[in-house]
Length: 172
Figure 1 (tube, helix red, strand yellow):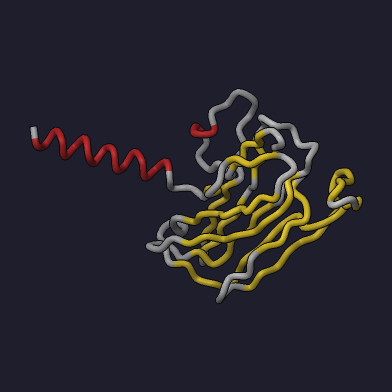
Figure 2: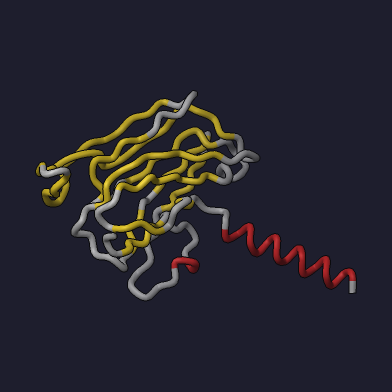
């Protein structure tokens, strides 16, 4: 009986750790038209190596992005044109941050950390859909590409390297 409980406990721990092994967003749902604070949770390195860079691609419809600097890391953004113009505080916005890159730091494999940015979810984004934030995690001579986006009807839990997702709820 004790070995059965021990085996069941080990299965539970191993089964749940696999579910949390990838980079995720802390808040996985937000209302369209709102300001969203994205907290990317990095739970491990790459194949035991320390994380040295985290790059996140900003999806269309997330505008006015401002990343949070992180002590010991270099912060860079790549700007570009949006696919269309958006209204933000009565102004038309047609370009902004398309990618955020934290690099030059060191997050050992045995530690956890968070990388943060904020942005506005455009008011015309479709509620009920999910936005994906593809992330590339670089480690010394390895990388993990959390960039897989599920096809229509596909369960994202079936993906090996899923991009963090944000479900859009109706405007409040």
